[in-house]
Amino acid sequence: MHEFRYQQGELFCEGVSVEKLARRHGTPLYVYSRGTIESHFTRLNLALKPLDHMVCYAMKANSNLAVLSTLARLKAGFDIVSAGELYRVLRAGGDPSRCVFAGVGKTEDEIRFALKTGIYSFNVESEAELNRINRIGISMRKQAPVALRVNPNIEAHTHAKITTGTYENKFGIAYETIEGLYGRASRMAGIHVRGIQMHIGSQITTVAPFARAVRKMLPLVRMLRDRHQLEFFSIGGGIGIVYRPALESGRRMWWDPSRKRIRPAGAASLPLTIDLYARTLVPLLKPLGMRILLEPGRFIVGNAGILVTRVEYLKRTGRKNFVIVDAAMNDLIRPAFYDSYHQIVPLRQHPKSMAGMIKSDVVGPVCESGDYFAKDRPLVPVREGDYLSIMSAGAYGFAMASNYNTRPRPAEILVAGKTVKVGRKRETIAELVRGEAA
Ligand SMILES: *Cc1c(COP(=O)(O)O)cnc(C)c1O
Image (cartoon, rainbow, N blue to C red; front, side, top):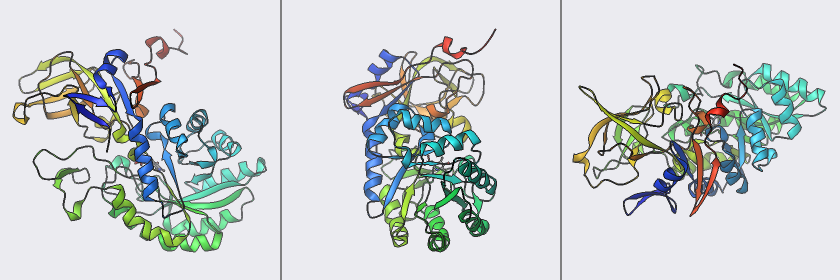
């Protein structure tokens, strides 16, 4: 699934020692494997080959230009959520005519910029937004291509902060009102109704919610396709990845985030694979004869990146062992924000077995109790100055990083084979106060 492996006891990203990168570029440090990104994109593309399809990478997961240009070279489309992201696509050599623009709050300026650039479709999230896009289309003497985002009211069984496809969420337009709105949209002078879209949530780890949502949408999609000559159906993103690999117990186990427990991998609870996803959905979608769009973010980059950090201090209180590291919640907010699990491994493999593990809390230096990467986690014994790798940090890692506590954001490195590219330099403290006045 990814190209971070031990070679003679040392963690490598493809052909490069991660410790060498850490020494050369400092920590905290994001390291991405280009080969892993490419293989995820290519595998997904191949699995969907029976369909006329377009994979639009949801770039909010990781919008580094080096990552984008990697995908642009593979002719990826992009799912964007702001003018800034569209600017990044252009800077990375991406094709704007393969971009879809999502989000509930598109501003006038953003709509104008996207329409001028010639994107593939606006994914419209409300009637008010449709009216605004129509007005702007007319004023620019253009017909803005749109798809209405349908809220299928399907429970995705994922974390509450990343469930998007139920009526409790701000996203999309209620299933029951879609038909009337398509009628109105088709009569608007500044609008070209091009497709229909849905997205039910993120980090979905079984195929059932996808299948249920597609099945529920099919009659509506068929009817609107015939009535309005719709060209595409976007089934959104949300393909989950494995954050917690199989335990070393011999039995295949996996962490089910929806139930918050480890489950044995049986037929009924298979972790989602691309084959299973395609095997289930392609037969449902193929008879539509439409172009199918996908908007995966996490699946493409999640396991293609790690956050490397250095142990600063060991601290033992009455009950706990704290491993204080130089990365913090501002660098990777997922544990604090989504209660998410990240595997943590040393860059140099420890000879000790599971029995020698020490239950530890891995924490950062920020003054928040939420500033942790692991709690009560069996960890190999570490010392000051050792390096650790926080795995599966390629998606919603750097992209959600902030400067909280006036901490410069980490550098980002892209490895391809034995070559190393600095995708982004480490920020300096002086850069952090640029634009401020004392
Ligand atoms: C965030 C988002 C995605 C990507 O979700 P992943 O879980 O990263 O695949 C796709 N489409 C829309 C509309 C989104 O908001």
